[in-house]
Length: 446
Ligand SMILES: [Zn+2]
Image (cartoon, rainbow, N blue to C red; front, side):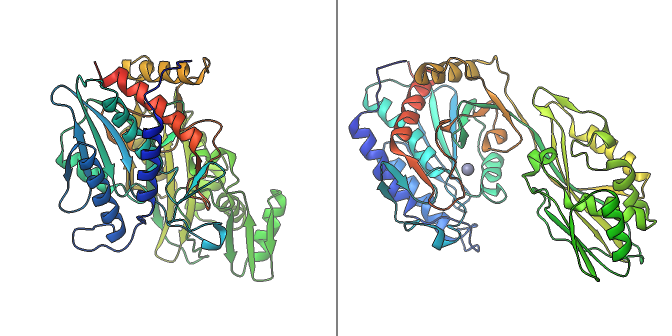
């Protein structure tokens, strides 16, 4: 354990005040206005953050169209990026909150408010860690650039605009996940499988790509036969004379093999009743294996095994359309998977159609960046057994060169991201600031 810290009481007080002021700027996605592509709240939070960085002595630049901003310090040398986001999810059900989500208060040593964990708190913690090093008289040997995204919770359009217009960083961290460190994130491929329609039956579903569906319904003249097939397979359902609802268990698509996919179960049963090629794809090939192994073979690397979530199977007279979400192991080529998948589904009259793709993150575990950050984490927490991890989730780290997710939540902090009463124990926030200061000192200061 290192006992010396630059995180003084004065820095702690200033960081908490700054964080409260930032949380008091509601910044969830709203309809676009001129100069505010994600709504006026997010634009105001961006302007607020840039004014704060100005005041702290950074050079700042705000994209005039309102997509991003950055704040830089240091004169020469490579650029170390710290990538946060200023947008939050909405407050959600206000009756579930004990306090006003946008009037942050400290209660029982915890700061409560929307964005305190995701991602206003971590961003402020990193900012004041740098401020603490400067106040303590350390000299930069390179540049540090804070990059503020504005659309992390929706479509990442802000950070995409940054990467299109600005020069790349040389290394960096995204303080937008958990400690110790995420060095690999799987590639994220969302797409459609499309095929012919049928007049035998129709299905209409409206599910998210990134969740395993917990319910799937069929209504039509063959309910009794579908029910019999469900019984044969021992699948759970609720039925009336005209409708049957298959029940499953929803989990995030990145953990699809741990869920129970109600859509797949319905289709497996329907394949016993109807003769339709796209149904056979599920009933005879894919079945319930959300690793996609039945279709693609076993695909895995050190970042884990592929996951394959099928969340909708919409059928009308004209068309069949499946919505799919694949998390690809970080070293696996997307093109190869698409080629293989398209060839395989052709046997069932289906073809592949693009929707969205996020490239994977993979920074070698033995890189200077990962080794330095892990060394600091182990020293500061005393946890010598901590190892860098992989994730099926996604942070801005994957949008930047040589960038990993590092913190900001310590393992003993309950996860309140996107939830009511979002809170962060101040003691834990100070510990995070201490870790950030030491890490940034080693990487960026003389
Ligand atoms: Zn976040």
